[in-house]
Image 1: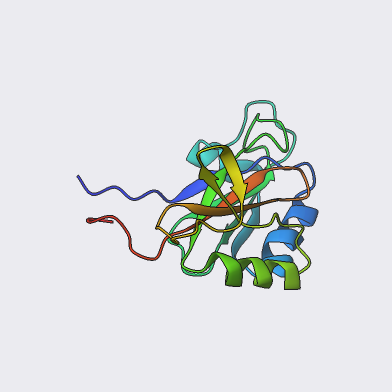
Image 2 (image 1 turned 120 degrees about the horizontal axis):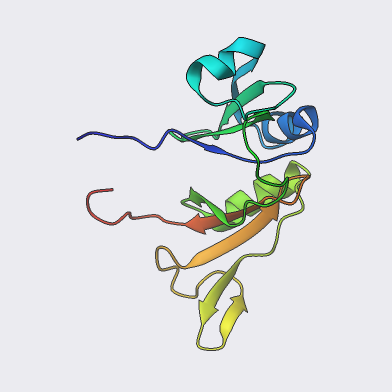
Length: 153
């Protein structure tokens, strides 16, 4: 069976504000912005009783997985998604890019003998250096440095 992970729903309180953050601030591709009363019912995504249906799909550069934000697509509370992972091959360059875009992003960190420690992992081992940021609703993203992926990835 060949299945691909396509999208994740991110709960937001203001779709236009979130769309501006992901598309304009982060530079993610805006794939669709669709509103319709019957569309959601037809594909089974509309939350029963939702007054409106709107779905916006955005995709990070280089990613095959997208996010969905919108109205009537989730019952989750805005800001309740925690620690969704993005991957980069250079944690420091990614941080500099995010800062340049106006994103409030953490300093790089890693986990050592004492728990979370500042700075990238000293040996720059794959899967070991991180930084984090939040969208306007508080949904939290974790950026992880991976230069060489595990076999089969």
